[in-house]
Length: 335
Image 1 (cartoon, rainbow, N blue to C red):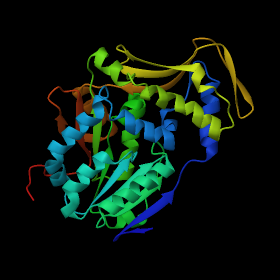
Image 2 (image 1 turned 45 degrees about the vertical axis):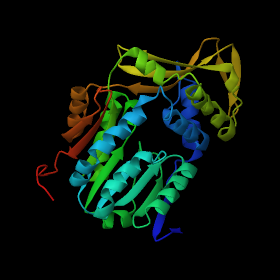
Image 3 (image 1 turned 180 degrees about the vertical axis):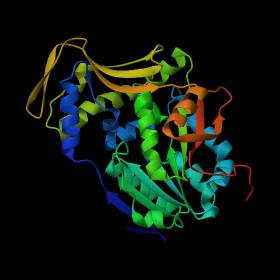
Image 4 (image 1 turned 120 degrees about the vertical axis):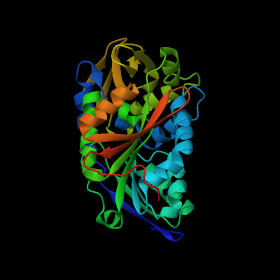
């Protein structure tokens, strides 16, 4: 679809509704109950998360943006000319603009991957309007699974750079994070790289405030998952009967988010009865926090070499440039 002098190339690989349904049935009939956080992001969920990123308590977004702005010239040098920037989870693309501004004179192209199709298309259209000289590709898919990238996008790229901001890697267990990173090498290629945001371990007070804000936006974001199941999976959950519960487990090194039943209740999900006892929880998200050394070691086990790391003055957040282990780069060479 043309927009200015740029073209959005859209590919819909979104998982079938059956994937959401089967995952929900499996998770809600398990003990303890659980569901994957990737299902937060329908249109409403994406909008609520955008609001979360602007909250005073939620430091990760503004801190990562500050790091990226400071590091942008060096990131552009490392990326070089004719780079295909591949973003896992397009979000609102605020951070993407920092990179595209830095790369603008280097003839980049951009490919966004997101599970929320409507949000993805809207974001891609806006980027294409703002950067008419850049080819924009949008692939609606579950990036935790193998993805075939469009041949047209790959053909013109001299190198591939995956961009995974927001410390979304923290939603994976460390073992699953290592597996994801290892699989991503198939996307970026043996000479490709990844630019990834990683939240760092810090005080319990700072962490818990970030995931349980005073305005209740995170609570609404969490409960929206039930609303989405009602709409898409023929369910009848009563979101008002669940409270948002978030806490930091220091032993496991992670924030946990749950929906806790305020009372005994029964919901139906595609004809199946789902029983909740009072106080029973549905586990909706983990967010692991790393030390710099621990994350670099995890990346190395996945097949990446740590080439550069940037942090903020408080060392609350980090951005890592990782090279596929088979890549051979002269990181000191000037353009």
